Figure (spheres, rainbow, N blue to C red):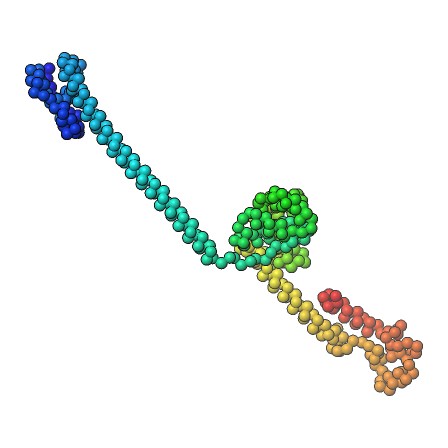
Length: 386
């Protein structure tokens, strides 16, 4: 059997010597170990960590426990070392745990202080910030006719959004909505307001929509959208109607440009046709239509002013340069001054020479004069005649 070494477990020898000084082997025990040929240091045999020796075999263990009393004493010393080491580690862990707990508590306090500081800073900033300027109140809603429910709802939402700091809670917003109702609408809302049924603005709007909303809103908008054409409408009025119906009918914006082109007047289509491939978007088409509409209206105004100013000139051209229309003093026979005075004294017609009627009532009125007058009337512009 190879020589045995009694080696303390690594890291525990010094502790054992310092804490177990009373268990140092006696001279009697040393003699016993020398008789067995073993180098006994007072510890149970263990392989030297520096050696390549295998762990204790069963035979070696049986050799060790031949003397039960000596083996018990060695096991007891080894147990004391293990217990001391375990106690030291436990105490260190307890100290570390306590330190971690203290650190965690301090971290929590720091975070709480930071939150309080941030809240104080935000509160001070809000106190220093001036309230938003008051926006125009939404109109009073009564029966869904004027204003309509949809239009009124949009204005209410705009008001509450722009003056959100004036109405910080849902309760204050609900109160504002109720304050902008009268008549039937207020009567419908009154029970819910009394019982505090309405907790949010959406609940108020949903309730009113059941009464005043159009259940066929999209279908009706689609029908009106299909039949919409510009006609004699001002373009700004027309495009406003177009956008409104397209939105209500849920027409996809990718179709707006082509639909708009098909609904404007023929003259505008004809004018825009050469540049249509260069119009990339719906907004571009709206811009071009607006410019064209303004230009065409200005040209029409100039033409109307010119037509009224040239009315007399066209009449003179038709009469061969005369600046006066045929009248009672213009006769086909070109009366002399003497004849004119004679006819006047005798009360004769300057046209036929007969008595009993004036020249403008003459049954034989000059045919040439009549034809000239009719021709002049036919050449007058329609705008002037209207």
